[in-house]
Image (cartoon, rainbow, N blue to C red):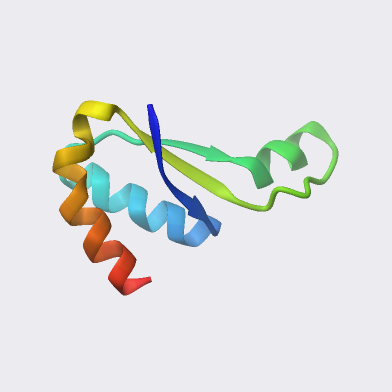
Length: 70
């Protein structure tokens, strides 16, 4: 798995939706929710999106369009 995005929760979920629409299944690591569920806050207020390395070529056009929009 490789990290392709790190940012706000809203942006990460928008990217996740775009990837899924193209048949790429991402993994979303929500550091914000993880800290809250464990009962403590977190200084790391980002959400990370990962994909499998072999999906990177297919994801590149999506990432370029996403990065120009957000």
